[in-house]
Image (cartoon, rainbow, N blue to C red; front, side, top):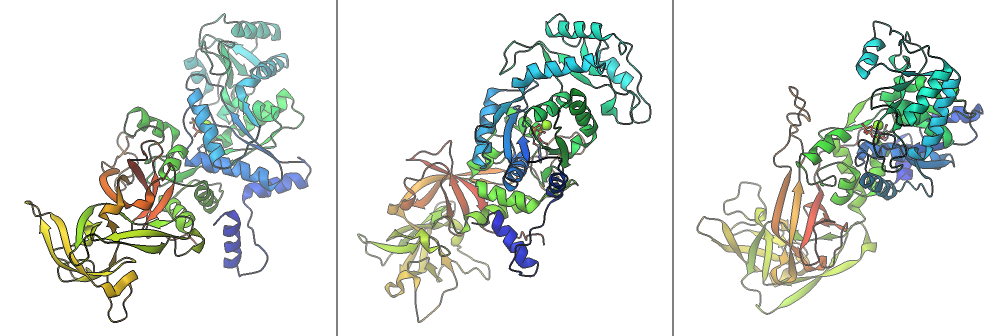
Length: 571
Ligand code: ATP
Ligand code: MG
């Protein structure tokens, strides 16, 4: 298994083949090393804090594995915490899907599952504490006025006329807010920091708002909700998080993060460290965009195999190992960049290469009849399941007079260098016999319906000492194969045009992102395949039993990835 250790070993080899592992540390590890050495923290405690407003995607996988990996590496702890402070978009469905995805990725949070909404009382208390210190005030300005007063990069902000309310008045008004005496937007609680700060986030940010809304966890207990920048540092501090690792867009919010934990007075304030988000080329990653594709019905739900949500990747047949390998290869950086989707495909191919059986499947079947093979005979070939991994054993594959081969493996009038079947040509039926094409039949439209061949009984197992053939094709026995549906996927977006349309920001969709093949034939050994089982279909790619639509008597497969690629690992 090409796991993290392997990659590190490989890089050690690349670095000169020394015996000792050369493990290069990322900048976050360097910072943590320093913090521990200088005694700022005794342990490492990280968290993954999703907002339950959608499904997780490959970018989140990076964050999960990074946070979990650090906790593991330093013998620390890892929390899964739902940042459920905004009831507008949150749903229990999302909570459940996120839990399942984090577990599937192998980031074991044990019993360390938390909800920010469980801290609403403490957050309220923290706000009261700030008011008592003269560090927060209730403001009556409307949202628009607040924005206007805030100023911009060039101009400093203006103080709110409510900024100098007395502590008593603020305490009373804030309590009234909590008790539901105001309408949404009528009043807010703001931190009292500095309207002239060069950092706009520090210009008296709103920390609590009135919102008469039911919450998925706390029901109707609250009609005021804390804002993210106030809630998040408190959640971290309450849980004893040491390193609060987040993405770059929060860099400008760090002074506010530090302000909150300092002013609320936590003894061991957590430290925020930012890294660059993971972006993939030609793939829709933003949660907002995935959500829109789902809501507009362009894809069939959050787990449509064309998406890169974790649920979709799982359904398509990606493994947690392949995603871990991918995240490791991407590394951790401070500057934004996009990673080639082909690297993700590389990782799944690498992972499945030695783990999965290779079986024969004909996606676009054409009948092949061996005219000189006895009509009532069936023989079996013992075929290795994976030539690169003997431990996967072998299986018996039935052979008979009537077979199916793939339409593209026969041509009436082939171009030069076509070595597969055509009239007069001899090829190897993989692991079986040499066959020579004698004739063919077509329908009224000229489509080939049957290819007639003769076989040479002296070439059993596809071996022959007297002559060679240039082509080897795969096949299944008509009577010993089952019907299946196979779904082939291409990029959801049009690669040529780029993901987003420059004019209006809409997505440039590829109309052929999914092709459904209904009457594929697969060797009967496939019977009994269950959801998420995956196989290599020889010469075609890796395929996974669809977890939603496949039935025992009507199998449905998703193509995970084809076999061919021009992708090379960046050195
Ligand atoms: P939004 O907040 O707009 O709903 P989000 O993608 O930031 O979307 P969150 O649930 O807030 O969703 O994300 C949880 C964590 O995942 C955050 O710490 C965030 O920084 C991290 N994260 C989100 N997208 C990526 C990405 N593309 N690469 C790495 N980490 C990401
Ligand atoms: Mg977010």
